[in-house]
Length: 120
Picture 1: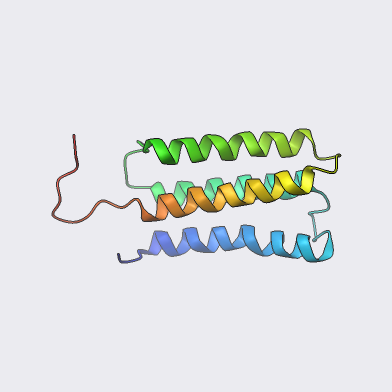
Picture 2: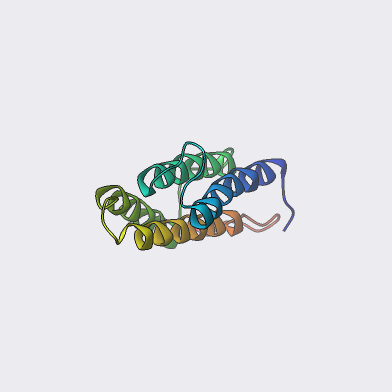
């Protein structure tokens, strides 16, 4: 599997999610990120941008596993936003970040091979 330029840009966008999250875990806040709600929103925005970059040029059809992982990520985002003031927010945020990593990995590895006809 060769990485393309758009893959490298998507990896940088995903790293832009992980760096503030690690800083948030270590310090409890980062510049412009002071609670779980803002960290989750940053993850959703940058994760969505990484998804858009990596999927550009391909049909938007996604597989079942990736669709379920994306739906799980969205549900965890909504739960993190809803319960940001409670003690479970840190666990929900960690689960949301893990689901973002899963969606990103599935999308990065979901690549049509050259010379192989797609299943219909």
